[in-house]
Structures are given as C-alpha cells and as structure tokens.
Amino acid sequence: MLKKPFDTIHELVDPRPLALFRMVFGAAMLYQMVHYMGSGLIESGLLAPKMLFKYEGFGWVQPFDKGTMHLLLMLLVISSAEILLGFYARLAAAVFGFGFLYILLLEKSLFNNHLYLFCLVGMMLAFMPVDNVWSVTRLFSKNEQSDTRVPRWTILLLRAQFFIVYFYGGIAKLNPDWLLRQEPMRSALRFFAEAHPAMGFVYNEPMVYFFTYGGLVFDLLIGFMLLWRPARTYALVLVAFFNISNHFLFDDIGVFPFVMLPATLLFFPPEEIAAFLDKHGWRLKAEGKRKRSEMPTHEPPGRWPLVRVLLGSYLVFQLLFPLRWIFLPGNVDWSSIGQRFSWRMKSTVREVDKMEFYLTNDAGERGMVKVDSYLNTLQLQMIARDPRMVIDFAKFLHKDSRQRGMPVEHVKTVITVRYNGRGPQMLYPPEMDVAALDPRTDPREKWVPVLTEE
Figure 1: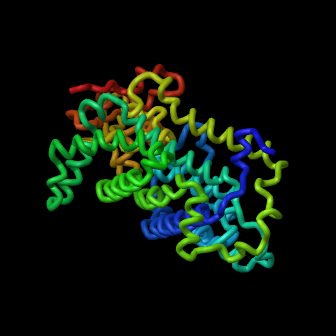
Figure 2: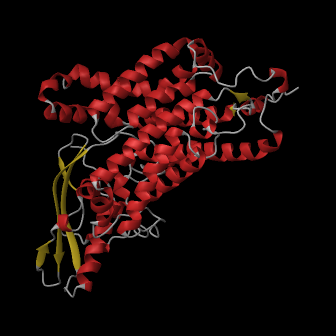
C-alpha cells in the first residue's frame, strides 16, 4: 500500500481536463501566431530595426535571414494547429514553446509576461501526454483499448503555474504607488476613457479605487479561492469579470484573458470534471471495456525519481527567480532591473514627452539623430522604460557613427517621461555622455536615473 504523500502526484486520472486545456491553448496560440503573420512581426519587428536590444547573456541569439524567419513563424502556426488538433501534440508543443522563446529572446522590447507564460506552457505540455483523448493521434490509434489516463502531476503542475502568475501579480502590487497613489491603474483608466469617450464613466474615484484595490485582492486570493471548493463558484465569477475587464481595458494583452479563463478548469479535481462530462454524455469511447481491477492506479514507479527531480527543479525556479527583485536596491518598476520574468504585470506606465539623441564632438558641435530611422515603434515605446536600453542605443549610435567616419565623441540625450502619473522627469542630464556609461562596471547610482517624486 502506498503511504507516502507525494505518491499521489503519480496517480492516473481522467485525461479530459488536460485535453480540454490543450485544445483551448492551441486555439489561442494559433490565433496569436496568425496575427503575428499579418502584423509584420518579422519585417518591422525584427529585421527592419538597425539594432536589436538583447537580454544580458543572450547577445548571441541572432535572427536568421528573412526567409528562414518566415519559415519559423509558419512552423509556429502549424505547431499551434497541431496542439489544437492533438496531432503529435507533444512534439508540436516543444517546437512551439522553444521556437516562440527564441523569437522573444531576439528583442527585449517584445517581452510581455503573458508571452513568457505561453512559452512556459508550451514547454510544459511537451512533457505531458496531452493527446491521449480528443485528438487526431487517438483517432488513428490502432490500440483503442490502451489506457488514456494521465498522471495527476500534469494537472497539478499547470495549476501551480497559473497560481504563481496570479499570486505574484498580487505581490507586485504591494508597493507605494499602487497602494497610496492608485497608479498605474488611475492612468490606465484615464487612457481608456480618453480613447473611448462613450465609456468615460469608468474614470472616476470610485472606479479607480475599485479596480486598484479589487485587482490587488483578486490576485492575492483568487488562487486560494479556486482551490477551496466552497469558494470556487464565486471565484469563477470573479475570474470571468477580471479577465473580460482586462480584455477591454488593455490593448496589449492579446489572447491572454482567453487562456486564463479556461485555465480555471485545472483547479477542479479531475474526478469532478469527469463526472460532469459523463453526466452530459461526453464519456470516453473506450471507458468500461477494461476491468478497473486490471488497470494500474499509478504511472510506472521507475519514472518517479526523474519526474520528481524535474518538477521540483522547475517549481523552485518559478518560486524563487521572480522574487530576485527583493534583493536588489531601488524601485524595481522604475529601474526595470529584475522586473521581467517576474510576473510584475501592469505595475507601471510611462508617458514619453520627449526623446532626443544628439551626436557631439569635442568642438561642441552636435547633430540630432533621427531615432525612428534606427528603431521601430515598439522599441521607441519601450526604450524609456529601461535605462540599459537607452545606454545600449547610445553605444550603438557612437559605434555606428564612428564606423561611418563621423568625428563623434559623445552621445547625449534629452528624454523626458511621466512615470505612474507623476510630472515630467528627465532621465539623464543633457550634458551627460550616455554612451560612456556601462551598467556592467559602473555603480548603479551612476546609470539608473533618480526617481523624482513630484
């Protein structure tokens, strides 16, 4: 008799919840990838800019030629469709997860928490028997009597991932701007009201407080409510309201709400979902054709050590790595250091009033750079959010100008932003040579601008 508590993660459970999530995820990713094909992600997003902003340690990740990049994007479209249909779904999930991650690593300004989540989910599904039922693979299987059940850990791992996304999103809101100034939600509601005059009623003090503190409480508690059966019905209503509201309020989150909504199924015990589906006529085709006493209750014990090592390593990383900002000085959302890959969603807003770069020589002569001839629109939007991107671009301008024979000695900037509803603030003094800064060797106070509270 199995007595160890962790042995339950290896129990074999009904495969339909996992299959349902696989189909929803595949459909959402198919829509997202087709959208990228139509929006010119390859040409305007990755090939048109004269420089790409790299993550520290990933400067070696470079784009292929135009034809190969389009082929990769088409491969992501095909793999998404295969995940949806359940056709070699594990291989397709691996191709999608790692292929999409490669694209995100090419350019720092492409980062978004939900896109990072999609990469993780794709890679997780690659290790799960996601096409055991309701799939093309199963439809053409020659052994229809084979056991279709899946290990319980497949459900638990996905559940843990979505729990972390919600809970850490709540932790990110425990900061003075969110708690005392209702920012950036106040600014987000103002932007929405300005863009949709008919919905101007959403921008008032009661609504600002409702979305600010309601969002905080939601993120911190919703995972626990979904796990606690008496509260689950109320939690489903809140999840629906929260994600549908986000869909209308924010124009940069894409299909994220439509992945998070069906992901709530993962918080139900597989047995409950199976009973509901059976009651409504969605029984498994081969169910009842084998005696239950002849079927194993757990996956083969020989897999357990490897499964536990992989699960433990992944969860430790997901629990600790997003919290690295706690050990870093300063305001993480202002400096952006430690902000990415940390589920700090919608924790900051910056309005760029001015962005100018100047090339100067020792004689004091200077010329303004036509920035949009170097960078695309998304890069221009993101550069003011990360001082390292400003410095990287300044260094690129200095090197590029010198290679073209220009007697450039310094690169100076006039960049003015409004951070979380504050007044305009200049990032660097106009006389500072930004290209001479080095985040790798200079003390942080030298290259991270000081946040002015007023």
